[in-house]
Every structure is written in C-alpha cells, then in structure tokens.
Amino acid sequence: MTREEIEAKVKDFLIEDIEIDEEKITPDAKLKDDLGIDSLDFVDIVVIVEKKFGFKIKQEEMMGVDTVAKFCDYIETKVK
Image 1 (tube, one colour):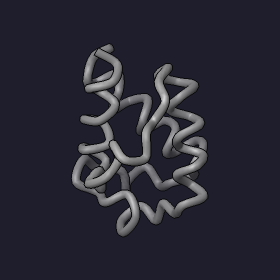
Image 2 (image 1 turned 120 degrees about the horizontal axis):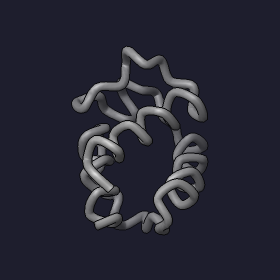
Image 3 (image 1 turned 180 degrees about the vertical axis):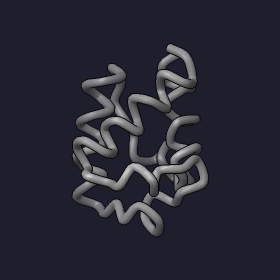
Image 4 (image 1 turned 90 degrees about the horizontal axis):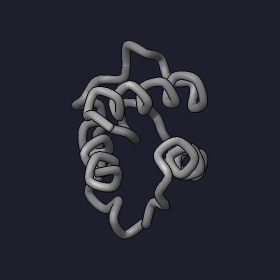
C-alpha cells in the first residue's frame, strides 16, 4: 500500500465516519486540537483502522502521534 493510498483512506474515514470537515484535514492538523478528535472518536478510529488496514493499534505505540501526518506515518510502518 502506498503512502498516497494510506492518506486517502485516512482522509476518507475521518470525513465519513468521524464527520470532520474535509478542509480541516491537512498533514499538520493536530488530531485533538485542530480536528477535535476526543477519546470516544479514538475508540472508533482504532476499530476502523483495524478493519481497513488489518492490524491492531497498541496504545503505547500511539504516544507522540498528534498530527494527521504522524498518524499516517504510524500506519505506514505497520502495513509494509
């Protein structure tokens, strides 16, 4: 899976499932501060990522993942 495919899938589920405005989703957008993703949204995101990308997110691995770009980086390391 290419980086572009990962970014497209992430953007799609943030818009469709988490209901975030498309114009807010940029690589530097902070997940909590800019996109307003809260702990309940993160639970949904974990389920979506497991379904769409086929791996389980470990909470300790998500430390420091605070932007859309870093989230895509994390996914990219898991799907290669």
